[in-house]
Length: 62
Image (cartoon, rainbow, N blue to C red):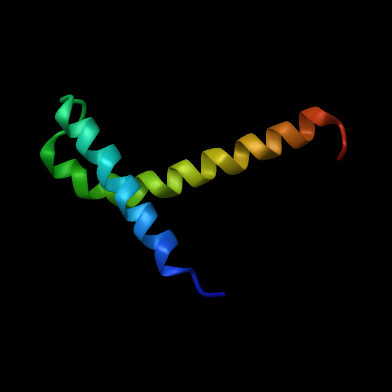
């Protein structure tokens, strides 16, 4: 399955924004910014999947 280019661009922009905010507020050092750019989209997707799974379990329809 091929990942659409638009999704990749959105994830890249999301990662850059999160990294810039964390660096701008002094939460992370400058050298951690590239790591966050790569890791932030994956973490956000994982959190969304876990939230949907938790809602599915809580609904009792499983």
